[in-house]
Image 1 (cartoon, rainbow over the protein chains, first blue to last red):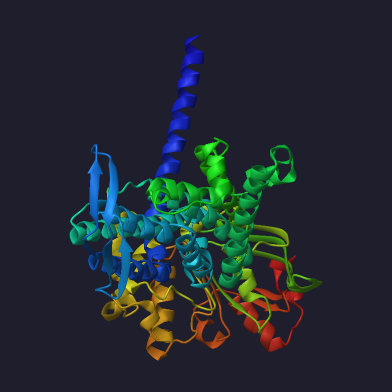
Image 2: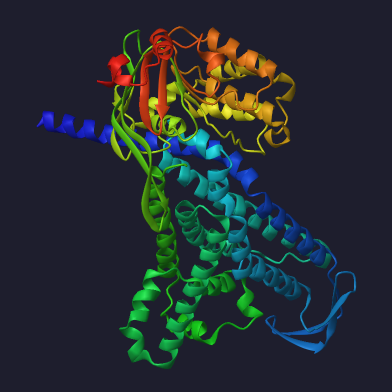
Length: 329
Length: 249
């Protein structure tokens, strides 16, 4: 009995040690590749910096003059007369019925909706299209592949570094715009980082595809075109699926579309979740099909998130397998 | 660590072919049935005209390419075991280094990649900066350096971890006279246990330094053996390698 116990303990400790080694290897690879990815993603960083500066300028220049809101029973707000929201030092004037706190929330959710939504994702993916191809063509690949560094961990660390760099800038965007609004309107827009988390998941999903295309195609244009096309196809399948469900529930249950919906990432679902998480749904209209799916409980947030990220991770695993046996001509 | 007489590299029936294009099944034969053994402390010079297969052979030795047929062993282990690459320093034929990296940081990174202990990294990097006269460029980004200086940096990356096996593909490429002298000095200063495989068109520069020669032509070995016998074969005008090279049998 004691021999069996000792044997089991030895196996456990070996497993623990190998997991620890793997984790340590990943951390080392991450530290090593971080710098290279930082240089490689120069355009993503520039894009985010410019977008953040522009958004902060818009927020700092926001001036709200006078909507008088009457409060009834501490909750119901009835606007008495319209006010005026001035942006970019008076260049843009909008008639506004909201008070300061609601205006701050509206402006913030508007900026977050576009920066962390489909436009931000596609621009980030465009910037990240050189993450692997730049590595393969810069000579860094030759240095790494002729060293004993684990190839799979090298690729995984580049994937994680890419996400972390974009996430860092997206986080800065979220916080900086909120601070700027708090400064100009004297009202904190009460941000949550849920929207930022959904941006990270959305990016992780399609960056995996981008990396797989980078390893197999080895050309930035191919990566960019392929990833964008794949995103569009997924969006189309996602919307068609909910539209089919919205119109005819019977055909919605068992069809090829259902299989495609569950096998592919779900950008439309993720965009809807971003709208819900950032509070944009209070100010902007949602897709009626998606709203129906959400309200009837057919759209399950965690299932959409996990199945989408699963595709991204599967793509990275496949890319890692390809990278291990890749020849560098 | 490999000692004198130990096998460092062994190629058995090595073939490498490339497809002309992914849609074209026609193949280009880069290496044909190459059998070759390199022992510890030997200094090999690989010569041959363009398209002889020199760079392909060296790329297979460092696992950048996979053989189509045959086997390659590094330090007695199959070449797909990448752990043995820790003891290998490689200089590629077309030196392309990441343009954004400062010289010193890149050398530190390469030393780290090859598992040099952190305490030794600074010492080794400093030594390389000195030996290749790169001290004044240590904080300059590689993209801002001239081609000759980039070649020096590339050489430094091959030497920085003190490898047991050095594989240099056309190291004289773009080097000026000072660079050439420094390279030759570095090669002579290497630890005696270091094995070197060097491919170059400039036979005159290295034939005094080399102990063995591997001559390739159209992917076939035309001579493989000690330098002294190579001269005999050249003087006597033998073209058949089998008459002179026991390694080919």
